[in-house]
Length: 261
Image 1 (spheres, one colour):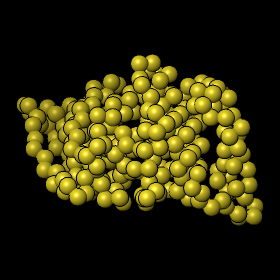
Image 2 (tube, rainbow, N blue to C red; image 1 turned 180 degrees about the vertical axis):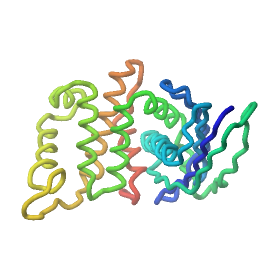
Image 3 (cartoon, rainbow, N blue to C red; image 1 turned 45 degrees about the vertical axis):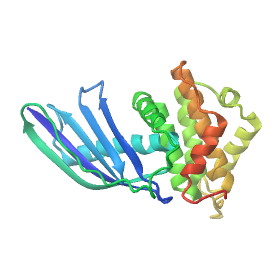
Image 4 (cartoon, one colour; image 1 turned 45 degrees about the horizontal axis):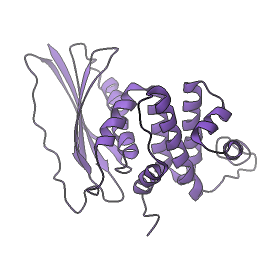
């Protein structure tokens, strides 16, 4: 006997890009439960499979959101763009016998709305594998996604993303700055801006709050992506990190408005 929890998400992008067609299989090492993820156009089907599957909708809802975040973060890191996921349906099938097969119907890929053809989806698969394997990369990547989604609060998520990596790798700020090839003084300035009288990470008595700034929404998110690459090299020594140009191009593709023309 096997149970299935199926969640359907709508994926949207303000630049008009569609999600490339992807099929991803994933098995949880701790539980043995399996996932099948099918994405394309503006839809994603997230299927969880297992004989010991919890049949509580709330439990499966939370887990499916955790999984779809890995997809949206991988699309960002893979240079395809910034996508938002909205749950549109959920179904639990109980006590299925025999081999499990199904057919899914995705939205048609409109050539005028697809991600540009030069964008390769192999990096998306590669990053999805890494995010599923390493918690600290996944947390930092989620914060990079949140920083771009909420530009007026970008620095909050950039700072926390860097903290995930610093604590997860067991390094200090100086060592992290060296490996990122960022001047330590700039990292100190980031910490000062985030923590003191700016309303970024802490409330102020005056009620003053720093306005959204371009460098927080672009340059510092690039730094966070560079740091994610540095962390992945530490975790996977054979990994070839993204170049600075590739990082900048991924952010340029991801921002909801066209920054340069």
